[in-house]
Image (cartoon, rainbow, N blue to C red):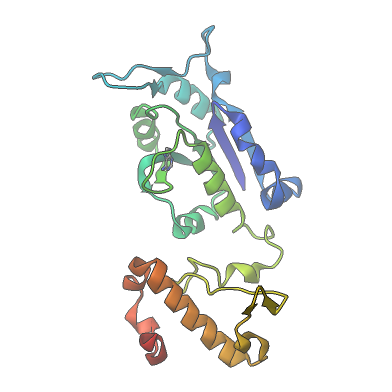
Length: 241
Ligand code: ADE
């Protein structure tokens, strides 16, 4: 997969050189390029923003600068991602939808956002455009959201995670539940013992215990996710939990 990130703060994306994403880049599984939007400005001050039409606080990013940059970076099958608090919620399903793409282009807005004509223009030209929000809070710009989108998508690419089974049971997976609690050695720590069933070697009982705990945790932390479960996916023991 190729991912281009356009930003006025390329250094913000430095963590993408580390850990699994860094390794995916080194091994060629991920071709990630970070660009400075100001490289496409033409004035002495390298201006990317201006005052909002209609008045109001703050500055808006100019569509002409973004247009020049995106015309150069977008390829015919690219999917344009615009992180914005006004976008649709970015979820694990969104990451799964983006992971098979050949080419993602992430355009990081700052200030009050990017002139609305940018999304409109590229949609009208047949580009797939996704305006995505991390959640119901406002960040200073799209860079942190770009880090999140790149990491959530990159770990789904074949070969990026050593053991693909670790993707199967995790929170927000197919079961629609949060993940069960996990434990490792020592079996007793600070007066707390690992639940005995996990030491029993009884795979059926361990699977049942984990499902009970996933259900309990989901009900406590995310009642909205329990509401969204398909009742047909629950057995009688689940309903008792
Ligand atoms: N830019 C500013 N706030 C954001 C958010 N919540 N999600 C995505 N991009 C943003």
